[in-house]
Each structure stands twice: as structure tokens, then as C-alpha cells.
Image: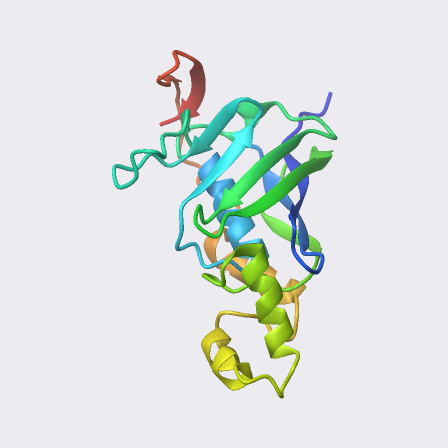
Length: 209
């Protein structure tokens, strides 16, 4: 019987004035931190802020001493997607930038059995909002300004958004170029061993070392 090797995932931004989504493949051997990077590159984010996943009751992210209130249950660098044991229709939440609080909804749309699966964007729509624009409300204001050349902040806003925003919209080719630079192909053939990781709530997870 074929063994599942990864997922097809659709991630969409919540509460944006225009639809923004990406559909991509990802190997289940990736960690949640690598999934974070795939989402960043597929969307067009710059990766300059903290993030967290919500999987059922668990928060998965990067522990940091800079923000004591941010204390994820699970370290995203140490747990692989295979642990989630997702099926078609399974969902998760992903939040990027805990200030602007960009909420993404993820849905597993297909289980892959492709032994050569790699991170790749299959489809998408909508430009990624610029970093530090002020969340969904600020993004709505931003879109109104850049659509109105007579607006007093038009020139200033366009200058600010230069190299922050895809004015021409989503590009599948550009998204995959970003992914290929970070995830070029097959994993290393170096032998991996498994160990158990215990989190602060006493739950155990399998991870490579």
C-alpha cells in the first residue's frame, strides 16, 4: 500500500478586503517551522515577525525570552507535520505578526503519495499585504489610498510600499522562485534518528536529530 508523503494545503487570509489565498504542496517530513517558511514564501511575507500555529488546543511556535506572554506549548522547530496526522478536511490556524495579527486558515485538501514531493505553490490569488501596514483594517485603508491618485497620501504611500507590495498582483512564478531558493529539492541523504521530545505539559512528540 502506498505511503503518504505530504499534503496539499490551501491557506487563506482572514478578514481581508479582497481574497488572498495560496495552494501548495509540502512534505510531511517538514517541521512546523519549515511549514511557516513555506507559507511565508508562498504568500510573499518577509518573515520579520513572530508567528504561531493553532492545532486543536495546542499552540506551536518559537519560544522567546523577549516576550514572556508568548509561550507556545510546542517548539515548532522540533515537531514534524507527520505528528499532526492530518486527513483531508483537517484544519489549522496560523497567525503571522502578533501585532498586526494576520490570521490564516489552513485546510488539508489532499494527501500526497508522491515520493518526490517538495514545497511548491500550485495556485493562488491576491497580492500579499505589505508588512507593518496595520493589519486588515490598515490594509483596507492602504488599498483605498493607492487606488486614488488624487488622495493626498497617494505618492507617499506608494513610495512606502515600494518593494513591500506586489502592485501587479500575485505571481505563481515568483512564488515558486522564492520557494526553490529556500527549498531546492530532495532532502539530504544523511541518516536521521528519532528521539522523543517532552513539552512543558508532559506530552511527547517524535522528532529527528
